[in-house]
Length: 336
Image 1 (cartoon, rainbow, N blue to C red):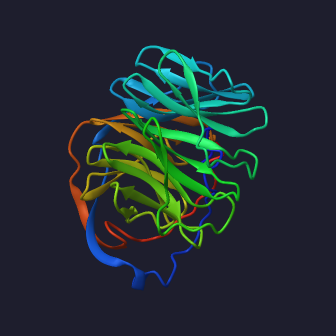
Image 2: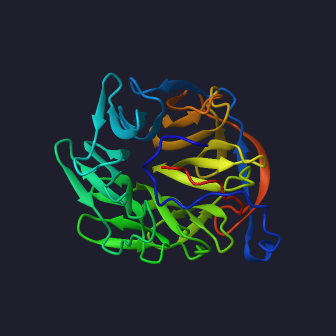
């Protein structure tokens, strides 16, 4: 799915792969259920005024953040349900994106004059640059990205001097690297990326030694692979709130679909207007947010409000290191 340019320049490139034949001996067999969407959400499109493409990345209560395209540039935004406010880091020369929000605090990233990425925090008044001290600039777009926030903790990812990607958690004083033990660095940009945090739990995705994309949950001690059973071309975990995780998977045809995982079952989340795919990026209570791509290739943000509780449609046997398996997926770079 193509979408707004900018927010994740060091996000590993995604490409389709067939399921590896040798993973069965490495994985635990367990069960998880998959629920059909079955009209349990009401979808509302969100398009920034005057934009030529809008992506939504995060939600906290009634406030939503993301990025929109206008002319040759991209800008972050804050939408409170009534008013759209542009967010443009004063140090940005190419683009700004707002990726996560918690209360009155926003995190994101921007591109400088050399086209390197920098994370930032914004408290409603001041932008503060947030760069992991281990960041290197091995390629255009490399740098640090801030993706999620919960209270005083920020998660994201950075590229090191060799071009590998690492997740991090920042507690306001110290950066701690997050590297899934199953992650590989088969090509530039591959590694681990953290996207969401809720309490002590962090979600994101990693690339294994073959370049496949796999979701994960990290509880502060151990990493658990989290792959949607329908994600035959891979899974990303993008957001978390309490026991609920949201993200994106690619099906056998490499089309993207959003998902909600409640600790037991995966529910597919597809905006009815998302002819070319849907991604769910954030969750707050019973509201999901993300973006979809229409038939013309334009992206639109959305919010989806739950109207009922999904019922599991079937029980599917999964192979997974921890919660689930079916390790497969590597879609294309998000172009952000």
